[in-house]
Image (tube, rainbow, N blue to C red; front, side, top):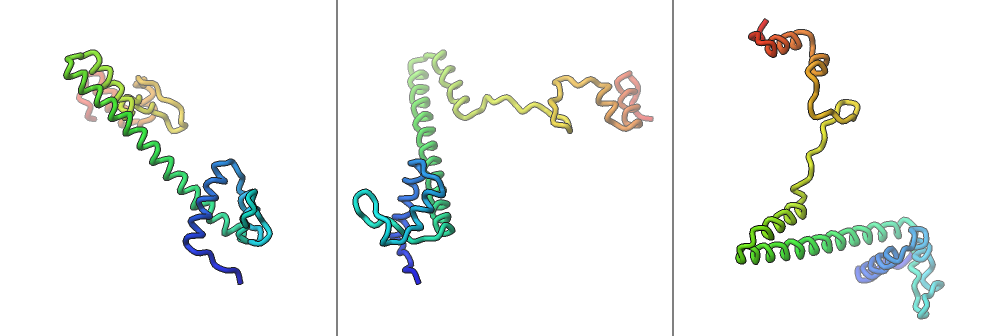
Length: 164
């Protein structure tokens, strides 16, 4: 029976898998690397590198590594966002203190872009996924509605009381 890896060994292996993934190795190459028996596989420095693991167990390490990489990327993205936000806010305070309204307005625009507040609203689509024009012709609406509702709307738009 194979010796079970210690928590320290697992952490070190996941760190190595992260490095291998970032170096561009494929799943198969990482699994091949990890599947070699402990005493048969040596790296460039002559250190024993084989783990004697199955592809299935190596896939677990790859999943752990991918989750770790994603967390690192999210953290780096959040740090970059925070830096940009802080810099814009600092410049905004300076612009307000200097009574530079034009620069302050530009910085507010930058903040709106940073927070994606200026995104255009999604275009309306019909049941087929086709975009609906901004002004829908009343006859199109009437064609969709049942006959009774169409009569009521027609009367209401022609000055009638809209009640049958």
